[in-house]
Length: 293
Image (cartoon, rainbow, N blue to C red; front, side, top):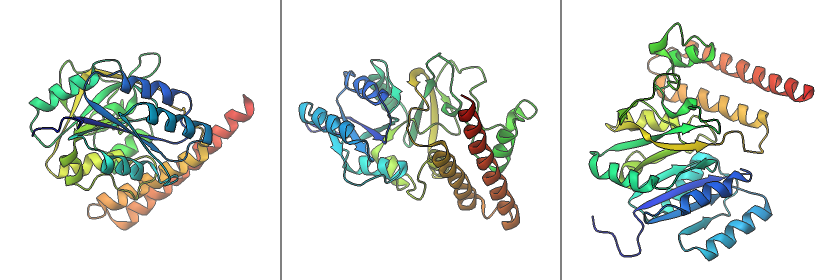
């Protein structure tokens, strides 16, 4: 496919909501890339002074496209808003707290030229201390893997665990059942072939749902160990209670949507009970820690 002279090859979609100062570090890391790109800044409701800064940046740099006015539509819908407006043939969904080193987009373009479609690519996500983060390489989420993860039974059942970040890092491009929505690279065509992200998810679990649907549609997912991105977690100013409740709702929705034909309604409702009890425990624990700090 031949691109028009002013058409970017890669559209980077970044959805932001009260992210904090790291947002501007993430933006700078995108704009430092040498590959042709556009940055779709989707503002889900940042503070007025942040929104004003983002608008000013878009006015100065033609590579930035600032999308706002839709309010806090949720992460999934925000990603879809950015993807619909994107002009690139390839999409990179990058969290607003993800900082890329130079050369990443050129590396992605090289992989895209070699991988058969449909494909999706994830990166090695590390924290500020250089440690691998849980979500960057995972199994598909099932009721069993969720149970193993929730009760920390991974060492007893290593083949059934959800997160694989404690395993040895692969030395080459490796097929992976699921990756993190903090860094997802694929073509526009493959993204829309399964109708993008499910907008019924507001926050969390949407990436696992997308990976499951992508694989069921015949796509292959890969983990690229040579693409290393610093992911600065816990930068959002949203409350712990709000985040945990959206996460619990997402897990419940995921299991009912994707496993209703494999498990009895009673089992799924018991699973719901466990999810919501665990969520309330985590909220209470966070409140207790806050009170003692």
